[in-house]
Amino acid sequence: NGVRSSDPLLQGISELKQVYFVHSYKAELCSENKDWVLSLTDYGSPFISAIRKGKVFAMQFHPEKSGKTGLELIGKVLQTCLTESVQPPLKLGNADRKNQVATKMCNRIIACLDVRSNDDGDLVVTKGDCYDVREKSADGKKGQVRNLGKPVALAERYYNEGADEITFLNITSFREMPATDAPMLKVLEETSKNVFVPLTIGGGIRNYTDKTGKKWSALDVASAYFRAGADKVSIGSDSVKAAMKWWKDGKKGDGSSSIERISHVYGAQAVVISVDPKRVYVDGKENHKHTVIETKKFGPNGEKHCWFQCTTAGGRRGADFDVPALVVACEALGAGEILLNSIDCDGQQQGYDIELVDLVCKLVTLPVIASSGAGNVQHFSELFEKTTSQAALASGIFHRKQVAISSVKEHLVEKSHAVRID
Image 1 (cartoon, helix red, strand yellow):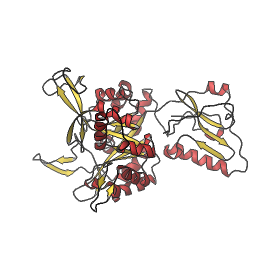
Image 2 (image 1 turned 120 degrees about the horizontal axis):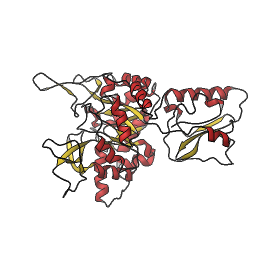
Image 3 (image 1 turned 90 degrees about the vertical axis):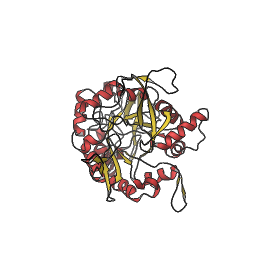
Image 4 (image 1 turned 30 degrees about the horizontal axis):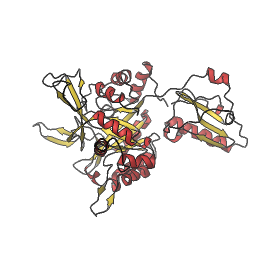
């Protein structure tokens, strides 16, 4: 979202540029704090997004995660604190507030990096085709793991190209012991040194016992990732288990799930639910225990109805559980965001599964990140025009330089969508 201010400190930043918010509380302007207010932001109604008194500054947003705009603001604050005379904030009078343009929530563009070890043991970024990350050989057999680059270098490239967030999905074989996964932790540590937007890491967030017999909780795994530089963790297979238990227990949580424990310690905004759905086509809507929709994407035998099946283990196992039941339960358990993939659309570059995204957006109040299927800039604007999804994630088209992140944002601006521009 943006900030609006008449103060010289925020010249060049307010209104035109955006910063990163994560918290759900707000401070409202009143007579007691009006002399401290540095900036306001709009979300439903105006709230205070920054204050200043003397050389003390406080911001509800995170400048260190707001890209180059945030770094510029930190520099201005430091420069102000080093001067001998610090003036109070320029007051936001009623006339100023009325004349200023209201700030807007931005649509986020997220770059995703699927990370795993290749057959030589090197950690690489790869990309699946319906979740298959191996090249096809001439005889139809599986070949080498697709190698699209090194994770740290690609993350830095996407940050410099304007990505609003970076997501690492750890699909490597040594995720069986994620809390001590030195290569992946090193990726986060190195990326954090030069990338100043939120980092999400997913893969293996669950309770497990390592080879020495030591027990690790999902909270331990998440904590290791957070200490290494992650801002959010993405929970996949374990969320299906937790959601099924929530429904079985009468729509009640008991505080034991990975979602509840991590959310309780780090906040809901740090917990992302990664959903790996697959379409299951049926003959009609009647007599089904799952949520069935009428679809414009007909099945292999001309079926006009389908439901969205949850899968686990990277899409390899199907559960007798549907996506609507999953996302409703996960929101109740304390998740803060939904990362909505699509096995059917993965790598096809035919656009996002609009029917799936729209279905989920109407079921939860959480931000929904749409993933899988982007092939051109029009697919991004189609997503934001036909659904209320707040973010779009893509990987292959960015890795192969088919589409630049800047081109996506330029197109969205042309279509009157708010985006973050550094």
